[in-house]
Length: 175
Picture 1 (cartoon, rainbow, N blue to C red):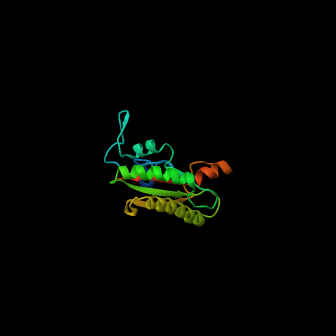
Picture 2 (picture 1 turned 90 degrees about the vertical axis):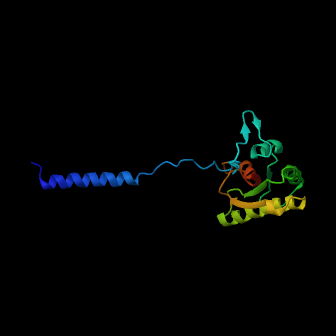
Picture 3 (picture 1 turned 45 degrees about the vertical axis):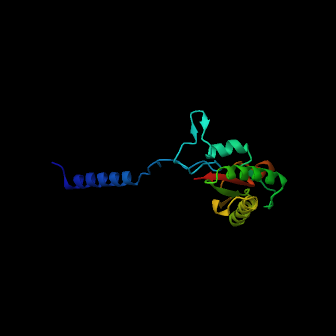
């Protein structure tokens, strides 16, 4: 015969196991993109079909820009220089070719400085790029900005080469 104490212990063990099993974390269905990854929010169509890129997709934008989807800044600066103007003019030409497309300009900073300072600097960088695109004829309603500050570096490291790669504004097409 089993004693009431043994039964209570078994019930307590079963309840504890069930509670622990309920607390176990579940893996997410889809992982978020890597920091700095250029990801289109357009899920209506696949940008690459076979070996061809769909015209007007984020993949098409990146391919046409050949690295000019990103502009870089000096330390604590957000001014647009002549190299930036060339890249932004290429972006504007692509956006003019696809008037139904919208874009987000992401502002980034290097790891130095406070989180708040770098978010503000990233915002100024994104707005500088957006304002230039508007000045060459892109409707401001098609453009949005977001600042990631130092939160999404593309280069890890505490040296000038890494910092230079992280001081940037990146244009991502949407819709």
